[in-house]
Image 1: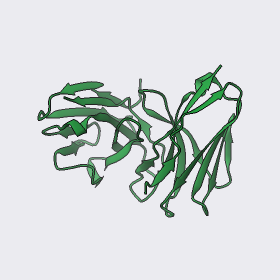
Image 2: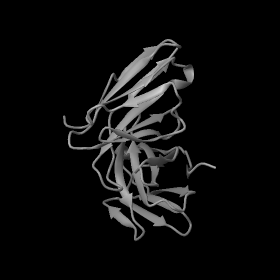
Image 3: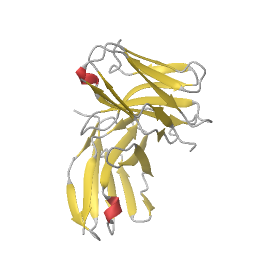
Image 4: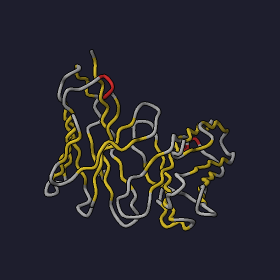
Length: 110
Length: 114
């Protein structure tokens, strides 16, 4: 079983739609959680951290459920520029190494 | 540009050749990480330095791979006797000390082994 599991998609949505991505992680000792965004043939970039209380950054909302080991990302009012791969990322252990999911590809269309 | 830089950006080599990649982290960052990403997968951790000390290596890092960070600044990743399975994007990231500090990624070196 992979440490971090995501639906690879692709998710094809029209502009303005709301889309949600889910992710599960297997290591209950994981301590920090993130969503990274990766454009085609580019490096991953931090989108937002994820906190147990839930957090919002503009059109983006992230949630963490530690009991279920489940992380979500909600994107409201999708824009064409949101088209990218969204990587669910977990930080475990003392080395601060990141464990990535395979990513969920989003394509926003007109 | 004061971000993480990597060189070369692309490398094509023949099977059996040695290759070396360089990463220059953000100058004030003392942690440096190497990851590998293959098509359709997320990046996978390879190794990590705190200053010049290599503190952790993944089991993915076979004995053909070696990484150094001799003065605690730039790092090199060498692959000896390359194999076709080594074809991937090699990503470098850097961060400040402290648990959970944001890791900033470089643009990567895309390796193709023929």
